[in-house]
Image (cartoon, rainbow, N blue to C red; front, top):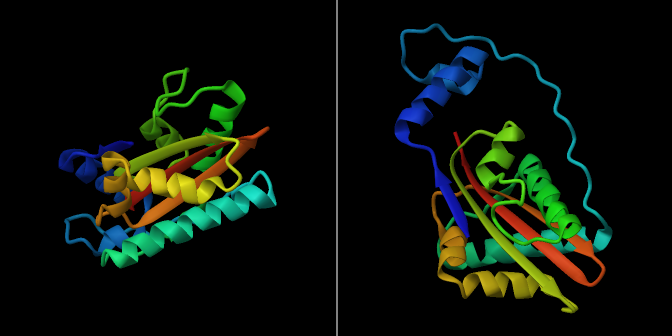
Length: 184
């Protein structure tokens, strides 16, 4: 379980930077700067899941997490395709480089991985899971997270609004990464 919150000062700087780059929703915030028109940007489509099996596992985790959140009176998490791609890429790296940690052997963290994808946030969290020789690892991942205080806190954190889930399989081992996000 890992979590990162941007300090209010940094959030204000990012908001000013976003305003200057043309984010139209920020133009509604009272300030002395005139609103700028947003620039059109091409979105790079997210790469598909590794397989139909891993795609089904990603969807199953998303569904189970949202059921748990609803049972606790929380809003459901919207699937963020860019965040899912970051999660999927990290699960793949863990599988290919044979490690399991919130910080990679190269030293990058979830904060650096999400920022490198140009995803802006005020709150960020990460849950990881790996399993070997488990026929249906998705429900086991969710159950394991719910039985771990820090992972459970990520799942039940009311401030989170979006999620990205990535599953990667290598032989009979699965790597799960779930990122949680509160965007600006």
